[in-house]
Length: 326
Image (cartoon, rainbow, N blue to C red; front, side):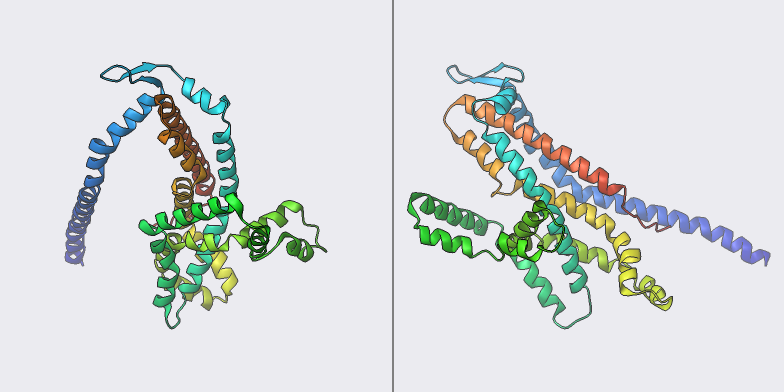
């Protein structure tokens, strides 16, 4: 018995040393994978960021060579907020309102689809590929073609679209506000909820297109949950509804945080974003003053995104459950 205790006491420290060395090797490999990004950020992106910040606080004098940057403080930032053109604030406010609609819809929809596609059924891989196809189609050159087609359609409608075509386009929506009001006629529901449901249903195509990455993240989180937890819950008599709220939802809550942050960044940086379009339009306008103004708008936009991400992460993190693997 003493020999067994002695052997066990000798082998346990060896196992601990092996586990620690394995963790160190994994940490080193992680740094190796991150190294290309760090090098690219330090030598390519960081100088560009510093230059844009310098331009946002300066007034460019291109009449002399080399170009001089005259420091003007926060004048460009003040001009963006209270200047003659208030379109920047209008587009920013519209984007924030759309964000309040899109983030819950995309996260909930992708979680719902992930739970369905995680079930055992025939053709599960095919259905997963089908729901991820919009992510592939909406990237790269396909996205630029779609944006060009939409801008061409808008310009044709602005030039002279017949009233009949405009009525047909308005009537092609999936659900109208009148139908929603009729549905909620006998319920004490406010006008705000009616408009929210109307916009949500009419925007279902865009929600599906922007839910592919979130769907994969949720699927990875669902598959990481041990089936033994569900088996023990069913043995104890728990229903599917109870297992979702007591097991699935807490275990998947870290993925909800990740998807919420990803959705915010994706919504604010997409090519179809109106604020991004307006900043690009100001930047491409001739004149050095417009360049400084565009840089100031870009930095204000960046700060707004950081504040929103911080607020969302702080709120959701208070309810996130992290499983201990000790």
